[in-house]
Image 1: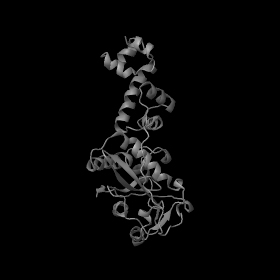
Image 2 (image 1 turned 45 degrees about the vertical axis):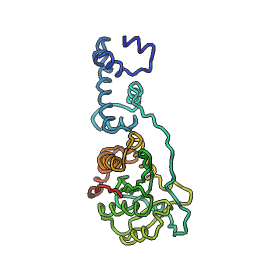
Image 3 (image 1 turned 120 degrees about the vertical axis):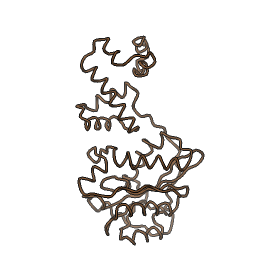
Image 4 (image 1 turned 120 degrees about the horizontal axis):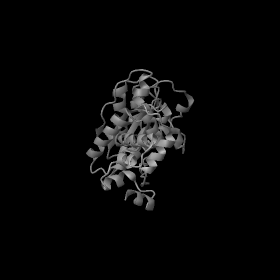
Length: 292
């Protein structure tokens, strides 16, 4: 019966068919006198599914790297084939995007210092940005700071208000957790939340150097944009948060237990940020985020 269904529907999911007819996938292959490669594919499928249970939004390249870290001798083409056969490739939806940046103000705009330096270790530069998070019936706003060298999220805060208090809360958390030395570059867009006198004063108090993206050039802050893309694809878009508190709890778990500690980053040689940082210098763990 399974063979008949697969013949009529070539794209049908073998795992689901085996569950429907209450048979084991290993048995399905064994009855055909499977090759060693087919039996290994069964074990590989199970390993892939386990990885995706822990890192829901992983694509086939990161799954391949994680398998290799676990000792599998496998290339990305084989992983892609299996994920395609099992319908495990991500299908993303586009969402309405509210405005989070208001750069129409008369406050001082600082030059872009980040493009003038070559980073060689953590805590030389941070990148800051804002995004929205959809709840049921409303939007809330997330401010984050990343270490520009390791991509580690070092500070974040969630609020219903998109104002300077939001960005200051994330900044204070980052300062308390990392204790940066004087001269660290703080890079952001030109939004009023980062250009405000209160925010700039907080930077200057700990001798950070403000740096801002060029006008109309979001690629200057590409690392922060990449982080938000990952956050939404692998956490936010997979859930419907009913409250600010639920979103807070989920984001805390993803940022501090998955993104910083487990998630493999292609730009870091497929290492998690915490592991990448450990190769340079010990740093303190990031504290928990708060809610306004």
